[in-house]
Length: 109
Image (cartoon, rainbow, N blue to C red; front, side, top):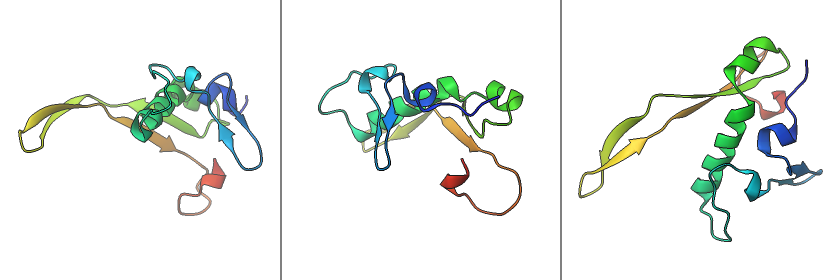
């Protein structure tokens, strides 16, 4: 089969060159694009977009796919001085490679 493409993982208008990756905010589901998006909202939107393309089903059926993202079960926790209730929505990013060496190296994916 084939390795997931840049546009499959990061959106239809994603591009890269030798030194930069450009991800169009309009391609990120659920994100209200603005000049002041927080780093956390951008990271969450990128993970949500990537999770659409990098499923465990695709990983299981195609050995060219080395990364998959899966949702966990939402939970709640209390935080802060007022003990406010927060919802926690986990995403797990899994990196797989042939077991030839130890350690996580981004160039393997």
